[in-house]
Image 1: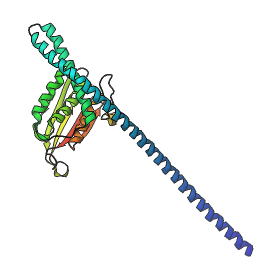
Image 2 (image 1 turned 180 degrees about the horizontal axis):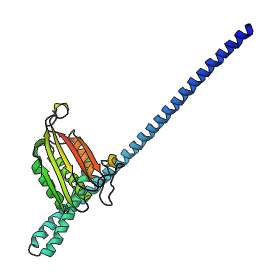
Image 3 (image 1 turned 90 degrees about the horizontal axis):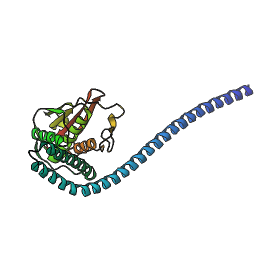
Image 4 (image 1 turned 90 degrees about the vertical axis):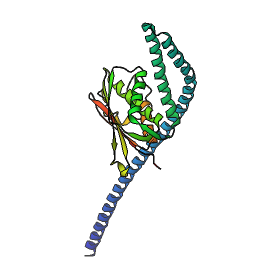
Length: 275
């Protein structure tokens, strides 16, 4: 009997040992998974830090270059405008002078984006009429040499915002829309007041919709990344500037796109400055 009891005790001890071993294996496996997750998160954070460091260095360099270029560019703008006036009546040569003016304005817009990206200024609030601002933005887009498109604007409202930053936002969204429509087309801008905004805050909504090539699913999350672009030309700063302007106004921006159909950007901004 004593031997049988010892065998049972030994068997029970082995069973307990096996259960404990399985639990240890499971815990070790879980621990390994957590370590892998932590290593992955750490690697991602290190990459993000390195990316931020590079972007900061590039932003500083871009700002210095932009300041150096802007002075002679200003002189070129003045001289090309004077030349256009002097050539009034000589249509062929006047077209050439107009091309110079458009090129200068395009460069000026690029430099403005670079300077804004480097400085990230805060918003200086004042009452802004969106109807007038969008009309100005369309003219600026056309002055950059963008033609063959039509803008349909629906809605009219006012809000407290930084007029210069908001114009930069509209121009960059328009340029992006026009560039996506290879054969021209219609850009629809809708502005409206949303009185039932988040946390009872009145919100102004700006929608910019094009009928362009659209954005592929794998790139949709990267469109606001600085220097990211799928085009052969451009700095990749336009939509990054749009995003920074939205952030400066404590707003939000979403993008909906279907490849081959078009893209719509939805910007929501508080109507009044937060006190």
